[in-house]
Amino acid sequence: MSETELRVSKIKDGTVIDHITGGHALDVVKILGITGKEKGTLTIAVNVPSKRLKAKDIVKIEGRELNPQELHKIALLAPHATINIIRGYNVVKKFEVKLPKVIENIVKCANPACISNSNEPVQARFYVECEEPLLLKCHYCGYIMEKKDVLQQF
Ligand code: CTP
Ligand code: ZN
Image (cartoon, rainbow, N blue to C red; front, side, top):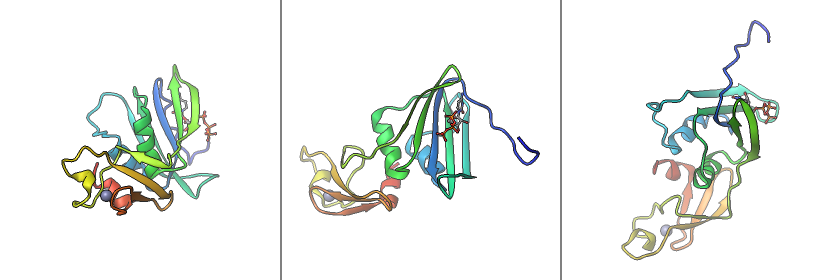
């Protein structure tokens, strides 16, 4: 470590979300419902130089592991993010998030007239047309949702 570097503490137990597309760390924090009032340490690093990406963001969440739905939400915003599960200071699992081809019950259709927004018992369903930039097509009305439409819901 040189004089121009400052090392961020390792976490004991929790999740490190690494290789987030540069500039999207705050979106990831938002989509996970993190407010900053939680107990554990939360570390957010934005625009860190990276070998693989031009610039990457990192989010470290002490004391929390993520469920599959939360991992899909992250994949919507940061399709190349790496998830590191930390237990007892060790990385016990490392994997890349994966966006399914069909997204169900994670986001609502932004078209107010869509049948999935009526009282009918139909559940929101989208096809991933493009991962980056994100384009989701509604199964019912064909409406195309972008990243900003998704972020508005969280
Ligand atoms: N990390 C952490 N606390 C720990 C262990 C790891 O905060 N107790 C962080 C590291 O700082 C790093 C990420 O989790 O940002 C992954 O750790 P590791 O696999 O050790 O690092 P790399 O080999 O650099 O990861 P990769 O090859 O995925 O870039
Ligand atoms: Zn729709």
